[in-house]
Image (tube, rainbow, N blue to C red):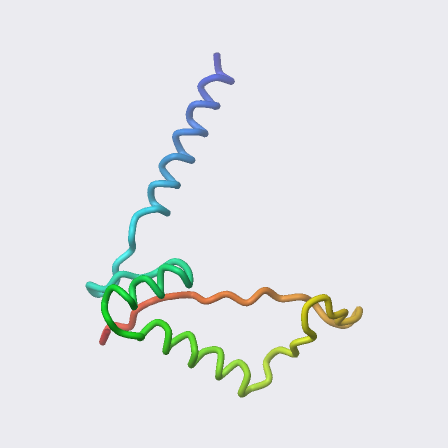
Length: 96
């Protein structure tokens, strides 16, 4: 009986978390995307390129400061290097 109760509670918590992750997030009245596809969809819907321009600016700065060394697909960095996945974190500033 206790095992069934824990099973049901676990699935209820997962469903609750899923619903929180699925709904849109807003900051200062603007929708905040969770990934690149959502960011581009918001840009198309709003008729501007604010998220695309912000992504390009961030990538330009990463390249400008030589933060990473691109070894290409299947490149072997050697034992002194660690693989790091790059991802964007989206937010909205208070001034829009």
